[in-house]
Length: 115
Length: 112
Image 1 (cartoon, rainbow over the protein chains, first blue to last red):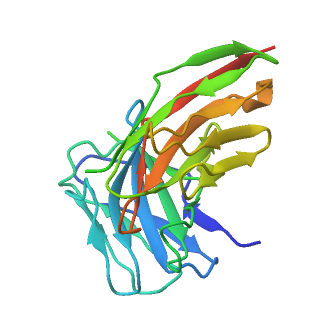
Image 2: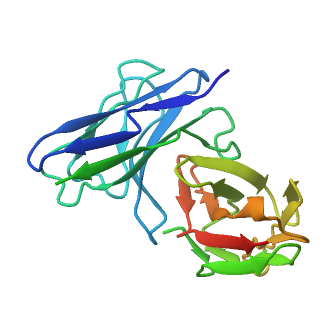
């Protein structure tokens, strides 16, 4: 079955450490996205990528970095510069063709806790 | 910039009650509109969508109509079930089609 896989489901880190969240999709989608979800704040866009080797900052990119070396993969690194990293992180993808109308497909998320 | 405003929750209903979750938007041009649902501990799933004015999206008994004159896309269901308990998000696709903008989400709790 096609879908988006995020791993791990739960991640714990000490403050000051960088951590990388994995996102893999086998839907052959061109565009991939990272959102952060905090209680009562909905989803906020961190980074997105329309094609391989290219990505753009979203609304809250500070303290995060991404890469898009393969179409299937879009890992997110939460750096020590991110002031409040504890959150639920969601990866999504969609086809670039007719992107205006095409919905996002989401993974099941990674819950990151930094202490 | 583009934005989406949803009614605050939680919304608590008894089984078989009528559901309305309000959603209004601000956008340039004519965005596509979406409703997503999130069950506990999971990602979001597309519930329905509408791509132009007066379109009605429907799925699993839920409906929403794209109202350009009131910039609204309210979600309705005639008879909710306990299994509908989840968080519901309204979203729009921005003018450039590059990203989706989400509302804050509305928690729905259905009691048996």
